[in-house]
Length: 290
Image 1 (cartoon, helix red, strand yellow):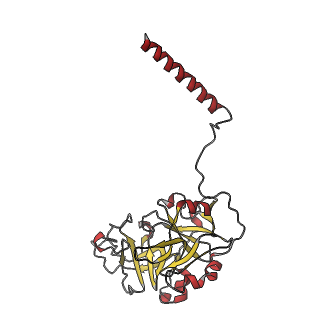
Image 2 (cartoon, one colour):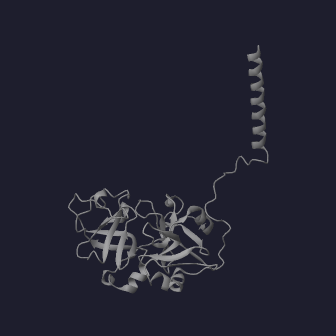
Image 3 (cartoon, helix red, strand yellow):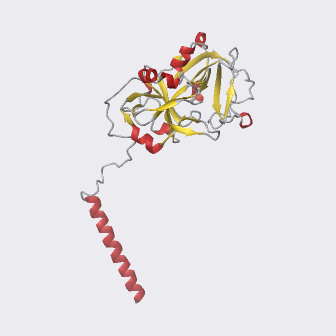
């Protein structure tokens, strides 16, 4: 008898709780038919002090192109706006996105995986720079926050995702049709101004062959990786001191054999000092040359 009474008591409580929950859902306290999704970025940002990326880089040119690993905090209300041209979708561009506004390009460093999920190629974004740092890693212009490595060297690197969330706003929907790679001019491979103006840009180099391609050697073997977990591959007829194809051992295409045919390579053309580094975004950036 006691057991039956207890069961009845719990059944009564369950029915009342269910009725209360239904009332809340049907009332004004819960909008049942309204989708509830997390806000990405800072919706309160507005275009107020917009400058071009070219203007920004020119203003901080002594920081970006003077001494390796130099950096400075931005302390004025200034913004840039541009489209994403490269992200981490293939696992080769790590914790950063490339932003191009037509006048210039810069890398934005973010300590977060899966950036491609909300920053796909073609997505336009507004970035508030006040409080962030601008600097270079091997003379490659970047935006982020200070980082000190195990050797005591400090440079601009990945900002945490919470800080990043306060500093950007998504604009419209992604439009990949507005993103076009620029053809790399091999005649200017040693041109310092060309390097300075285009490092970080989405570019295509046409009709090249990999020096080590034999049908077996792949893009990035674990036993060949350097301290940055990457492997550099050279191209025939191009000095590796001038240009390499740089691939992370974590890239999804790291285990693919190097193509033996002539190919067109598209990627984010970064720099390390005076060396061009081609970062393929994924294996779709490799096409057979005509």
